[in-house]
View 1 (cartoon, one colour):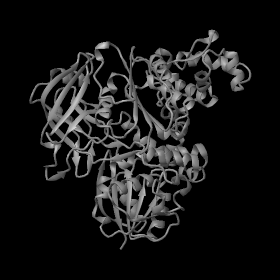
View 2: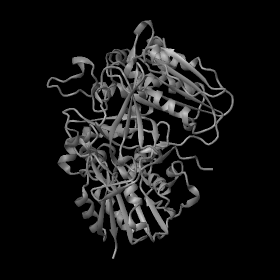
View 3: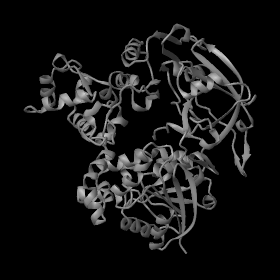
View 4: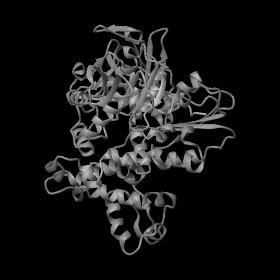
Length: 588
């Protein structure tokens, strides 16, 4: 049986609401009640938009503010089916969970923790009746398992809106065990508890030790359970580790989200540096790659996991545990301490702030996964630029496409990177090309996202996988509707190549498009054509593309040129948002 999909997607719409009233829930929580016509279905600039929908208890909407006060200049561009985050120097965005949605009265309630800092909290402090607020989202809603005996709801004060909404609306009939850490007793709220529910209030600063201790003290209920947690991102790392490693909850029974991030200390960034003092800086202020390389070594050797599993290890015991011979560990540990990966030394090693972050799967992928391998290939950037080939080929002796075709684990990483694509495909699934399409051929690491988007849109064509272009075995674990899929490629009304060109050279892209021409007369290429305007690393997108393929990030003109070389005509381009486009091709 296929696993249930974790999320349901929603159309991304820019909405304007105004303040109706402001309420003080507690001395630590301020509620702003918003309303307006944009919460219902509406039309703006000739585009019809659906009414606001946020059915999930922990849905997030993105508030749009501006550091210079000019919010209109910070707004993204609304597409017919999506959002394009155009560059805006003073844009500030913050994600918030609706505490209550009442479509009957046309009201949306947002709760703000009163802590005296931050742009969103400052806006709420000055909010007056009639003030406007713009927001986007939610992009998706969490799907909880259908049958549960109990659920853990864990968080700090920022999680109270989601926890309160869950208890009010009860999206499933399961006993709820609530744990909330608060910095002051005045932050406690009345919660809609039922018989059998429990609530534990822990007065503590939002740090990892306090939250982990409190979670470990919770009883272990019998039956099928689920754990949901939201708090400061680093404070949740040991909680995730405990729930999955010790409580043995499966990944699909744990949902943990960092709602905010404390800025005092950060892990070494994938771009090459940490805020670790002058030691991490070159003479001209260019970040040194040393912290990144040291963090990578610590992960590959198993240092981070070993210290997390057995805090207090001596350096000698750590070396023995890892099988590191000679003085190697003594060379590594001082640097790991400098960059905050470990602390302690001879008196016993423990993880530092950076080390705790490296427990997170997403964080460690920056040092050990596909992204890390691309970064290492940049050592060959200069000769690649001279020769006109890709740094990846010079580093590995093969193209990236050749590499991933024979490496299921590497291809699986590409598939996981494409999971966010599902939030951008409303424009594609709404396109008229599906009106008469009874079958669809899929290829590329984004194929699973295309299947999910078609499901959400109610499109039910017969699906086929082009196995010559996509390692289908990898996709099986990511597609939740295998009953709809013929895993043997054959002719189809429409072919969708989802991020299939992003790891191919121009010649390999032409080969794929020529192959597709033998299977269909209509094809769609879903690719990023420009950097994501919200990404802090947008300037690096072109370099990453060149490292992988030997070509810059392919814009519409470049994609069209590849299509023409393969005998296709470009019929139209559909903007999907976040720099991504769907190019519809026809073969005469």
